[in-house]
Length: 227
Image (cartoon, rainbow, N blue to C red):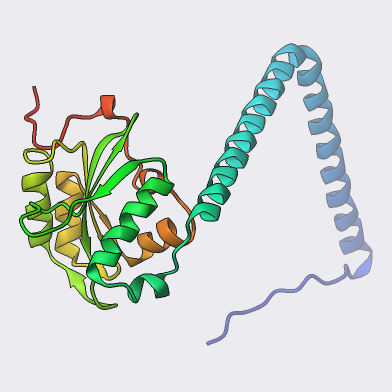
């Protein structure tokens, strides 16, 4: 059954016309009174309102300035290095690790590729003056393939104790299982799936901004027990 539609119609007869006129008059009077009340409040509290307006202007200007600076940094990163997902999919395992290293360097990290036999779940290690050390485990796979929780366990077990990492990340051009993502979120092992990889490599968002990595002083190193 369709929804009933209501349409306004013109008043009929003198009674309806008078009622409609009174309604409009009442609305006009209410608007005038509300405007007058607003003017009286403004006259009485104008210093406070002026301060609030100035604060709002400052906050808005600061927001636009931060946004403009972020856009500029993003453009500079893209001018340095931009990798499409199609290009990444065509890479080999070693080339993928080199690409992740180069992306970290683009983002302001000093990074080196270390992945080899016996690498203890670290393919790339990066260092940042404010963010500390990051360990990256690369999983180049077929599009649609999923990385499971076992990889997250391995990275968690070695990132801090073996590599002294402040942050650990598993990066794939595929996807992660639901359990892998949930376990990683709970145990501070960051994950970058195909969607996040596009934002990082193709759209130019820095990895630490994408993952919202806190400053080194704001967190405990991975693997160290809480005091």
